[in-house]
Amino acid sequence: MWLELSYEYSETMPVYPGSPAEKFDRNNQMSRGDHCNTSIITHYLHGGTHVDAPFHFYNKGKTIAQIPIEDFIYQHPLLIQKALKKSEFIEPEDLKAYGDALYTADILLFYTEYCKLRNDAARYADDFPALSEAAAKFIRTEVLNVKAVAIDVLSIESAILGPKENYKVHKTLLDGELYSVRPLLIYEDVNIGKVLGQTMKRIYAFPLRLKGLEASPVNIVAEVIA
Image 1 (cartoon, rainbow, N blue to C red):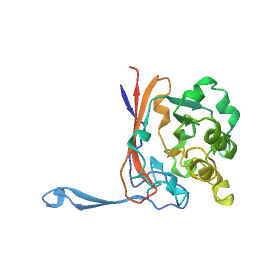
Image 2: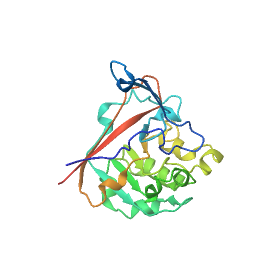
Image 3: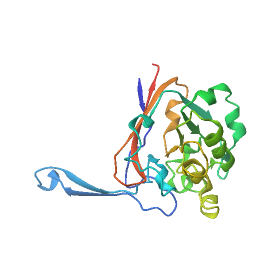
Image 4: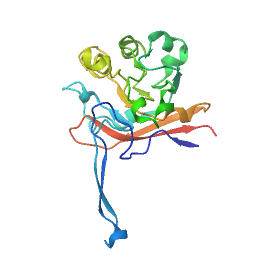
């Protein structure tokens, strides 16, 4: 059975504070006499369900078009659950609670329950929970099978502390010079709640191959046991 974990894109979807909204221009419409329906979208790459490549915060990092396709396929997904409120964090201890499964996983999916507020765009964007810098460093340096992390809020990093602290969490995960081990991929605004109670077999998360750019919209699909 297949479950889509990406949200639909719309002009009213919630966006990271200060980011531009989506814009859909329906330049041809059959309803007004045009021969077909065609559209133009204006899209900010970090809006909606998307993936960040290392180039997002590391100028020498791989762009979204340079990452091998196999890096977007995950054979051992692990769901990490911790109910969090605004301003709260996922910490290393929350990860260690998953024991051996943590060290065989190749993608970690963080379900904070904050996604339940997504229909209230203002609240959803207001200082949502995030991954702590300590947890990011632990994943990057100790959980060595993990290729990617995903979270059910607008960003892996606090919207309050991120700008104040020069985006330490993103840089910890993405920067190729901070640590000797591989950088990761980051998936944000993911509908992780759909796999609750499911046994996941694989995750597929294919981006658009946008040459020279740092991120992409992504359609994430979970293969689960029916």
